[in-house]
Image 1 (cartoon, rainbow, N blue to C red):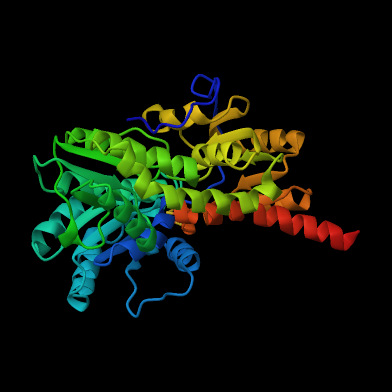
Image 2 (cartoon, rainbow, N blue to C red; image 1 turned 90 degrees about the vertical axis):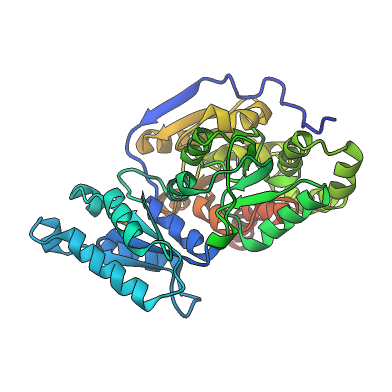
Length: 426
Ligand code: SF4
């Protein structure tokens, strides 16, 4: 049985990659807390950082929708930063107060920041110490979300990677789907896989600590997000096997992603088609509605979320766009290889960033649509370029068939708005 999409003639796997290591314009890894705290219902994210970190989180998370928030900041004051106070003792007191007040917390993440790294606060030791103290009621883990070390989606990667070593061991054959998805999207995905007879299915992260899957040498895993390189390596160390596949964006990507799993679990072509035919048709129809605006237009990706290569593949193969440059903070061949095979030959592929050089290239290319971070969007708009904020692609449900139309519409909207403004001005 094969359900694989046809690779693009040439593809981009052997395209020389332009590697840049200059100044970058991206949010830090703390941003991941905004979606992780919604996903993990019994977790708490305690950022050990400064008032700047607290402000970033509050403004990125917007209005809190929970009576009790699931993240907070232990503020390092000047005397901590100057080494005049015992930051460890203060952290312990802060955790003690928090856990006494919040018996619903079952896992606590101590999240490192730029200030905690600058003063070399050892959060790995702190989490071990606090784990011993509060086990078995609370599991304490740590990871870094600092802007020195991470771009914004790497925060989720670091968080999930910190969980892998403590998951229980099993020899059972099972599928693990890795990467945080909105609950409604996750339910659609699990529903389709179960309808094909694939199972048992584990999720990382799970909604609650009690739903966690054990892992081991008979675990196969599929990545639902492309920015999970560290988690991918950690799962490999536990003996789990990766199923390389394109990512489930658009009709084609979703079909290819499901097909890789179906193949592994021996699902017949008939069953696969019976489960996917109707949603595939819906996805194609929904994407076609946006294609009118997108077809024949050019797109330029600044490196931001690590979703750039899969999204360029979707826009070029399903929406008729031409990619001129596809930049990504990192390109891991084991993860991105199947996407590069599908991406039609032609765009410059860039890894890392040297923002001034890249801005010069974008100005020279004058693409119809530029995908970039918030900080670059306004200046580029002022120069007459149409932009889309990359961060919206992470905050909006865009995976799998039922969201394919919304994904295409996210790119079509700024182009329609610009066209409407031009008409008004004429
Ligand atoms: Fe700023 Fe660093 Fe805090 Fe992120 S972790 S908000 S980059 S100080």
